[in-house]
Image (cartoon, rainbow over all chains, first blue to last red; front, side, top):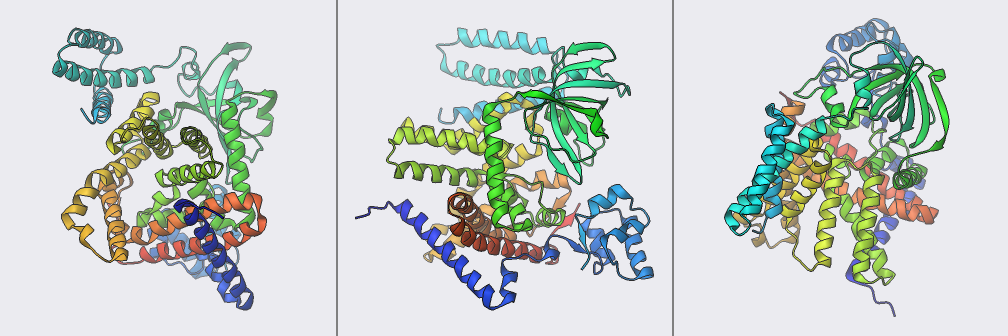
Length: 109
Length: 471
């Protein structure tokens, strides 16, 4: 009845496989919320946790000068954890322009 | 001679390198070219001398083309501003790129047509990089009048090429910084290429489809892998991929072009289109895809290589990888000879050349074909391809980015097959999601899972001690 070529068969199998996989994951996520972590990347993969990052990590990430990285850690030691990203503006060496860039790099839980 | 194009490309590149490192007058190269051309015509019957002279002509042509590209039109906007003069200019023209909105700023390339200083007006040409301090809804080909100060880019650099050199490679010599909306006036009408307008419209539609089904981070990564749109990639993800030497997966490359060619060829085959017409239509689709992804050097290289491969099928001739690569290099360098010094161009060609050159030799040396277990052989071959590409690009990366990542070989073993799967899922999502939302939703879950896995693997491999080090 149908005469599929080798390539057509491969495409059909691939589409069926990814659909099957998608439905299974969707179903598992409905039963167990933790499964959602499998297909929702955690925010720490894309941004640095401002309250947990160490000085070494901050320096090695090369997202800001060493002096400013030290100021951030010092600020955290003196004032406790950052309550929001806005608080970064209070750190010495971070103005509006740098803050706009750093907003994309850090997050506060 | 089997690899004529490869030799021609080598001599053409040599010409570009020679003239860029030594000062030679344009007319000296011209007269030399005339002499060699005449000699080649005279030695038409002597094959050996003729070939040597043709290679020499290719060298002269490379030098000649580079010298010509340095020369600007008399009415080029660059000639109106000799230094940072601080004068306020009125520029009329149109938007010549897809505007990018980043950190509440809008950046685009503006193609000038008329310049006005006080009451004096001149016709002009050339491109200006415009930076707006606010988000503005603009599109390609939109006609505008801009008022502002023109300045030259800074010459600072961390490597051997400065920001000024980078921009001049793209034909941009001036910047305009706009702080207020009153400095922009929209003019009626549209200019620009209809094909580019169509490609950008297509890109916007495909990007919309991706964003409809995926959350921000997976959508940003898939847009980069399928459509070459890297603007939304978070800084940390990009940084991690640079460290692990896997950032190449975020660039549209030969693999994507191959998939597009495969999909269209298959669709046309299902429609029972005549084979030769199918190949021609596939080539057209490749060019549209190339424009849609921004026509960066790796895509142009892959598109030209794909076109040569497909054309060889029409002409019933065997395609040679070195000749295809040389054709692609000549195609890019004929239009913009300065691209030879572009890092993207060097990385793209160096990796393919290293794979084409080293892979078969090392494979036969290690006798991988003797491995009986298919899975092990597949893994070993994957490692070898990644190793060859790393060897080919290591020098360029170390010199330009001051980073060496020995983890690259290991990281690529896991990440490259995963990236290939994501790309396939991405194309399936884009195609199925546009027509069947239910199927799109299902495919998007698998795609998101693969992207999450990729990000986790990447974050894990760079934590291995000695994974990377800065020079």
